[in-house]
Length: 178
Image (cartoon, rainbow, N blue to C red):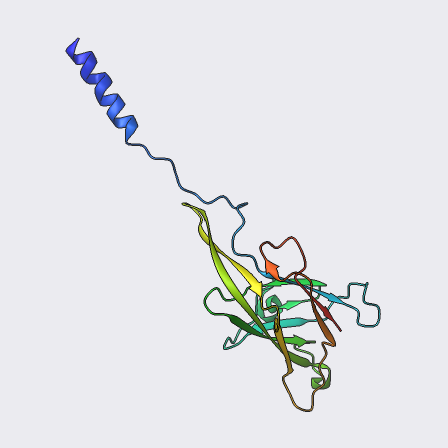
């Protein structure tokens, strides 16, 4: 009888030391990226694809990776919507947007700089996932748009803020017309 009680006690003790695995589910919403959609300036209701757009963060040498290609092609996109990260530390993020990047004719390559200003708020997601950051674009000056070269013309004609609160990536936050 004593052996059975000792066996049951040992079994119960060994099972009680097991812990639940803390793994963050891939479907759990995390820090959202800024979703930008491109539109035709002359026909504002029509989405327009960019041509070989390269987006590079301030102080960075490489661009944002948009696809699984190799070499410099992985930094280029030709779609009508992109998602770019914002810095979670600080209150602004600057990017250079290069249209027709890598074109052999330098007259067709055009660079505009955009600085996004915002505030951040950290929200607890779970013990496994930790925190995520929510961004709120500055209501007075959400962005600053400048041209990279003095002689160059801005390829971006107009920028519209659609959603100031960046809580998820399911909607367009910024519309760029060109």
